Structure formats: C-alpha cells, structure tokens
Image 1 (cartoon, one colour):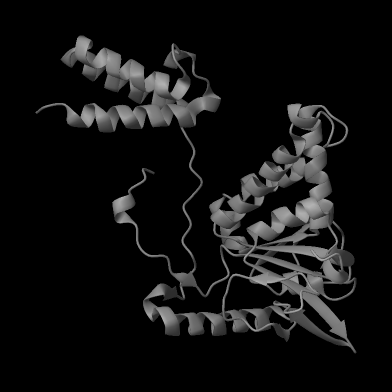
Image 2 (cartoon, one colour; image 1 turned 180 degrees about the vertical axis):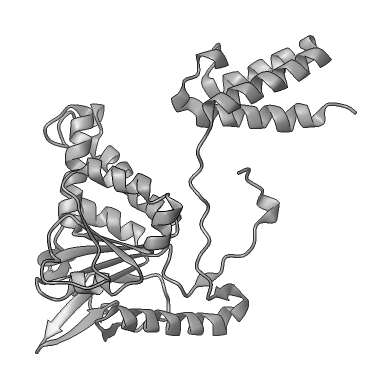
Length: 330
C-alpha cells in the first residue's frame, strides 16, 4: 500500500486495548497469569508454566520452548482465522522469553554469550532489534500485548551518593529498559494483608511503573476490569481537555503486514522500462540507472537483486512510476 500523507487524519485514542502494550509484574502467586487470562480472547504464550492451576474457556495456552517456536507463532498471527480467535497476546514471562531471544541471536551470530565479539558482532543491538520487531509487530497487527514478569528489589544510587530501594521487574536491566520503552502501561502488583492493588504511578519512586495516560490514578484495585475502567476514566478526562472527536470506541484498525511479490515487481519493472525505452532511450536510460544506483548501489543491476531485496525493488518500481511513467507527456 502506497504512503499518502495528504490522506492522514488526526489520531484518536482508542478505548479498546487492541494495539496497546501492557507490562504487569509482581511477586509469585500475586495473580499475574490470572490477570492475563482475564483479557479479551487471550492467547497465553507460556514461556513458563504458570497456568497449571488455571482452567476454563479463557485459558488457551501455547507452550514456547524456543525462539523458533515464537517465530512460528508470529507468522500465524497474520492468519485471519487466528485473528478471529485471539485479541490479546500474553507473554508469560518476559524473564524466560528474553533468555530464548538471546540464545536465538547468539546462534545466529555463532557465539556462546551475547557479549562475545564486542563491536564486531554487536550482539546486544541485534537482540534489542529482534525483541522490538517481534512484539511491536504483534501490536501493529491489532493485538493487545501483555508482558508478565516477576519482581525484585534493587538499590538505586542518587546523584548525591545516597541510596534507596526500588521494586522493579526481575528480568535483566538491559531487557527491562527495552520493554519499558515499548509499553503504554507498566504496573506493579502490591499485595498487602491479602489485598492486591496495581501501582501505576509512584511519587516517591519506590516502585518502577508508568502510564502514557496522563490522568490515570496512582493506585487501583488489581484486575483487568479495573484497569480498563481506570483507563476509560483517564480517556474521558483527556476528552474534556482535547475534545470527544479524538476519542473512539472502535477497535484500532491496523494495516496488514506488507509482503512483496518479487516476480510481480520484476515484471512491473520490465514493463515500465519497455514503455520508457520506446519513448526515448537517451532521455530515460540515465534516469532509470540513477534510480537503481540510489537504492542498490552504484553500478548494480536490478537483475542481480535477490528475493530478499523485494522491498527495495518495490521502491525502485514506485519511483520509476511516480517520477517517470506518470510524467510522460500526453
């Protein structure tokens, strides 16, 4: 699908959680997995078996024991039938999922530990890219994503040298930073005297949490329904300040993943070149070469392009059409 900036419309905040990414963490037995299966039409990606005591129509687990299996799931999430079955993808837990992601990248690079090879392999950057591309693409397909993690305490040192303890997710700092930058809501399950609450803001910074919704309360009862209710209250408040026209009850419409047909693109390229060469080889030949050089590199031929470069071929074909074919004098 071609980009058309002139057709863009202002973004509306959706009351539906599709397309949002949520990060829930807390101590063992706090109800993290239970929260996940309270979401609409959940698919539980069980990197850890935390669902053994759960049952019912809403508990649909898929055990994941390797990142290759995660890649298989990712491909199937494009299937229209699968989209009809599931609306929420639960990642339980990110602690284990991050280990499998790292192992996958290490195998790709032929190294044992992600830090091996230093700048030559740049393993951490590749892990970050693999993780972000995987889960951002799920949200872009229109699914809600819920990350689940355990909790731990860590000591934070202030600039003045003093220290304080902060409750944070238990996955490594590197992965936690990647995930925090992706999510719309991060909440900690606080269990006190048998009562469970979800902490969304921490004025004293004793708990790591965040919300992109400006008007959400700092602490709410811990349940999926409570979170949705609180989010809608925050959206109502946002609407008061910016107008109801920027709020929608509709599920967010997400563009389908784009695939590029190598053979069709190559055929289209040949058709366009044939038309232009019939018009004027001396005028259009250098212009076509300039476009190819820009995308494939100077001196490269499009006949040398591989199937993996189909996206680049699409850019060449689009530019030839818009800059040359569409501007042929009538």
